[in-house]
Length: 265
Image 1 (cartoon, helix red, strand yellow):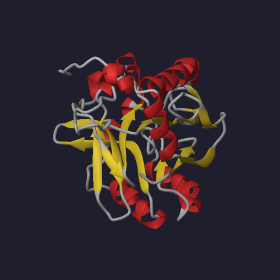
Image 2: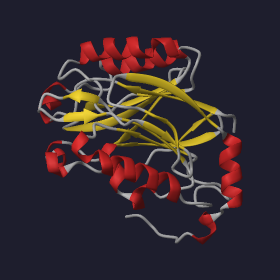
Image 3: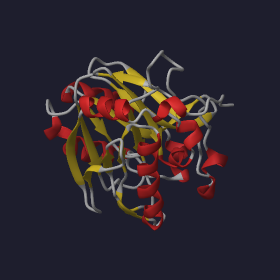
Image 4: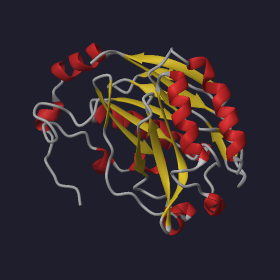
C-alpha cells in the first residue's frame, strides 16, 4: 500500500436545498484538486437529516449522482458522502463512492435511526461495502452504524488469506452535539478494536428541526490517537495515513489472531 491522503469536509448543510448544497460543497472541495486521494462529505449532504425530504429524493440518474461523479473527475480523487436515493418503492440513505475514472459504487445504510423514525420511512441496506483505493481496503459506513461493532468487525483471513477485511474505516454522519461524547468514544473504540485507521466527518450548524451539531470530525490512527481533530466550525483539512505505521502495529500487536470467529445474520 502507498500512503493515503484523506480530506474531511465539515460543512453547515443547507436545509432541504440540494442545489445550494452542491454549490456550497463544490466551493469547499475545489482547492483539494490534485492534493488528496479521498474526500469525505457528511451524511445526507444535499438536504440535512430529514424525514420530510423523502418526497424529493433523487434517483441514481439525478443531478447529485452526476455532480459527485464530476467532482471526483475534477479533483482526481474519490469523493464520498450519503444522500437520499429513491429506488423502486423505497428511499435509501445511500453512501455514494465516486472515483475519478467515472465508476460509482454505493452502500445503503443498514442501521436506521429509530429514535428519529428513520426505520419507518427508509429502506434498509443489508451488506457491507469494501472498496480498494491505492492498495488500501476501505469500509465506508453511515452515522448510526457506528454503534454496532459486530457488523463493523474487521475480520482477518476471511475474505482473503492473511488479510484484514479493511485498513480504513469511514463514517459520514449527522450526529447531534448532545451525543458528541458517544461519537468521540465510539470512534476511538472502533479504531482500537479493529486495528484500523478511522476517518469520520460530521456536519456543523443547526438543522431545520432545531438540532445543533458540533462537528468533531476526526481522523484516528489504529491506537485511537487523533491525527487531526475539528471543532464546531466549517472546516476542510487533509491528513496522510501511513501504510508502514499500520503494518508495523499489526505485526507488533496481532490481536486478530485471538479474535472470535462468527457468522453475521
